[in-house]
Length: 162
Image (cartoon, rainbow, N blue to C red):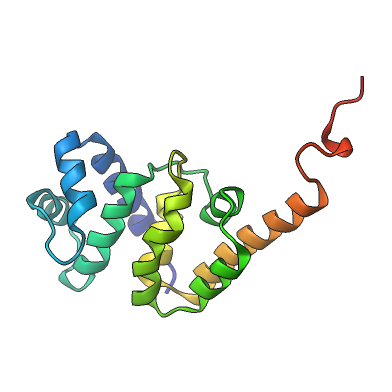
């Protein structure tokens, strides 16, 4: 399923909303995930018109948004590659079904703490888990990995000539 502009904008708006929440409410979201979302999650559901069928997935996505802030230009595949997430782990993750991938996403994202992520892309990937979104993620991850292998940091080709 391809994501509409409205859905992309919803991810960005929810990410901004979560970032603006008081620290106590952010902590509640981080701790309580989909099984027992805190009251502030239900405010997000109402404010952003999240469908009942998507609530469990959104609860997990919002929990992840608290830990990794939104940046519209930070493509998830590139961010995970630069954070050192192994290619074998990414390949296994991309082969999982949607529910397993959603659960495993928190483990993947522990390696990107302190960085930002494009939640319009990552949120759509996790919510829909469509083939096109997974291919886009894989392309970003593996193309970046190939570029890094060709031009490792600190190699002579990357150093300025003096």
